[in-house]
Image (cartoon, rainbow, N blue to C red; front, side):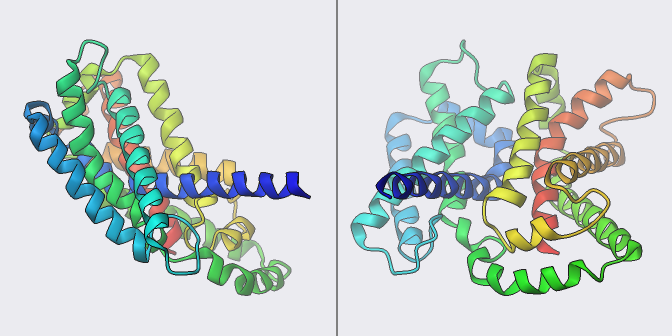
Length: 295
C-alpha cells in the first residue's frame, strides 16, 4: 500500500511538471524566437540578471498563491507557494536552456555571462506560463467525470460522417492555432538566422521535440477535457496518429506563412524550404496543439 501511494505521488509530480512545462511553452514560445531578447540577455549585467530573477520570483509566487501548475484544490500556504515558485523557475530555466541549445542560440562556445543572460531573460515569460498552467484552456479534472458518460454514450451513435466532421474540426483548429502563433514569427528575420545555424542532426531533434511537446499539451498535461479528448473519434484521432498528422498540418501552415511573407519563394531549393519550415514548425505545432484543445 505504501509503495503504491509513493508511486502515485511520483506520477502526480511528473504530471504536474509536464503540465507546467507545457504551460510555459504555450506562453513563452514567441519570445524564444525574438532576437531582441537574445541581445538584451547577452548584454545584461549581473545586477540586472539578479533583479530579473527577483521580480520573476515575486510575480510567480503571487500567481502560485491562486493558480500554479499543480492540481491542488485548497488555497496554497505560503511555504507551498514558495516551493512551487522555486520549481516553476527551475522548469523555466531548464526548458529555455534546452530550446536555446536546440535552436543553436547557445553553444559550447557561448560565454557563460552571455548564456546566463539569455537564459534568464528568456525564462521570465516562460516561467510565468508555468505558473499560469492551470488557467490555460480550462481545468480537466472538473469536467472529465461528467463528460466521460456523455462520451461513452456518443461512441455508439457516431457514424462515418461524424468521424469526418471531427477530423476536419481538428485539422481546422490546428491550422488556426498554428497561424495565431506562427503569423507573428514568420515575417521576422529570426527564422533565416536560426535556419542557417541548424544542422541536420539538430533538425531531427527539432522534429522530435515538436512532436513530444504537441503530444504533451494535448494528451498528457491535463488541459481542457483530456479524457474526453482521448475518447474522441476520427480518422486520425488516436494520440500518436493525431499528433503526427497535426504536426504535418502545422508544417504545411508554417510553409505557407513563410511563402506569404516572401521568406521563401518557389525558386528556392527544397532544402531551404525544409530548414525554414522546421524552424517555424516548432512554435506552429505548439499553437496547433492549443487550437485542438480549444474546440
